[in-house]
Each structure stands twice: as C-alpha cells, then as structure tokens.
Length: 90
Image 1 (cartoon, helix red, strand yellow):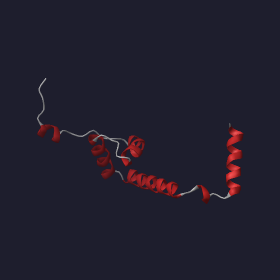
Image 2: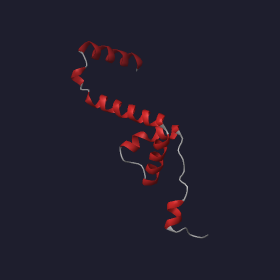
Image 3: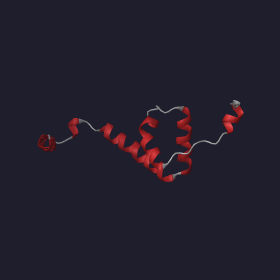
C-alpha cells in the first residue's frame, strides 16, 4: 500500500459530523478532550451550521448559570420539597 505524504494528508477531504454527533461531542469539546482531528472537524461543522452554534452558546450559558448557583441560593422550602420528591422516587 502506498503511503501518503503530509501534503496529501493536509489536502485530504475531512470527514463531516452530523448535528447529532456535534451535540454529543460538545462537553468533550469544551473540556479540550477531543483529538485535534475531531476538534478541527467539529469546528468545521460550526462554521457551516448556525443551529449548532446557537446550541453551543446555549449549552455554555447553561453551564455558567449552573456553576454560579450555590446551595444557599435555594430557599429552604424548595430544598425540603426537592428532598421529599427524591425520597418518594427512591
């Protein structure tokens, strides 16, 4: 089998991701856990898909909002109701 030279590899067509694949990879992308080739393919998809860009922004905002919450921000009566609900489901 013939080996490709680096120039051919750089010019090789890149695989495409579907929107579903992109949404499944968002957490790993934001954590910097994707392989460089997958990251490049992911970002290529984002350049073409405004829906995925919007989803990514919403995901980032949701993560930031959740991280900004503290246990003390939850009113005591809500804490009690959540605990009761969880106990009833166990």
